[in-house]
Length: 185
Image (cartoon, rainbow, N blue to C red; front, side, top):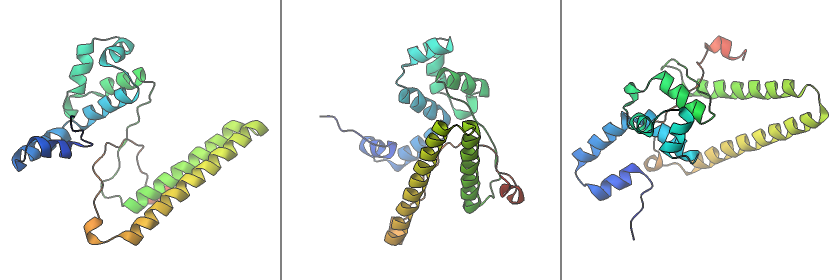
């Protein structure tokens, strides 16, 4: 029976014990985070390269090349077309690298408030729609409380050996505004 690996590090350890090879593979993967994310999106939509190529009106080899590209070789146009074929909207943004994590959390909480306000506005006072909005608000609150509860449990269990920094992820979002403007959102 073949062994399955849940991550690249596990696979690398079984293939090569040489730390230099493992470092090289990690560096190579860092250069292809966006391409790997595109593969994830395609697979998440249960599409083959050929099926995606048909949707994008291009060749399967173009999809293959795109999914094997280094991040600096992928154009915004490629991202837009890829997303459109998957019925996804591309969102890009910048934020100051010096922004504190606490400010990011506050920003995202404010964004949730905006989305809930838009949902209420879209319901236009319709009772049936307002019932749905109330369910969404309740569900959002439940999820938020679950997240807070999970993290409180983590804090209770922490010892220095168990703390691991989260892995880098591709994150695309709207720009973070100045702290003063943040409270207006």
